[in-house]
Length: 235
Image 1: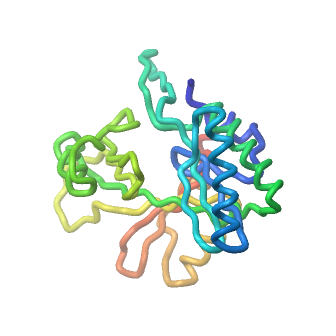
Image 2: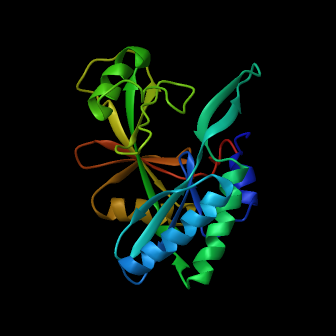
């Protein structure tokens, strides 16, 4: 299936779900592990009927779900097709079904609580260093470029955060090369930024907000708060 644009995902009106990074994320609040397991079982049965399932994390008070397709089709500027990890219509359709199942189980969604973490590494030599990072993080190089049109390290089982490489000119250390991308629901981005600032951080660059805002800690280490919304400069 073709990958959906962020606009198409937004227009789908998935009240319980937020797009963070590549996928759709939802958190449902449950009254105990058994209730969560029963909900997950029902979600699994729904997934069986369409041959597609979410990634699930279950705790005593919540169930976290992530929906994305590993066969989404991306077409580059030349019209060449690439198979990537992204949201497709089957994810949107299953998200709607899961929302209905949650209602049947009397569960409430907590979209403001969903968060995704990605690692970003500045480098001028992504293709050279990506095999090292894939092997270090996952034990082999199969994760390098999986589900991506670049050299991203993406473990199929999500044991570790995605590592992506941000192109840059050659530069000497100790300039910071790593930074965190913290993905949150758009409606809580300002709150998350304000909390970081109240804790001693500073906003370094908000010119691309609400797409991403660059912050730094007291030592100058940088991180980005990211949302699925476009920047004000590039709507």
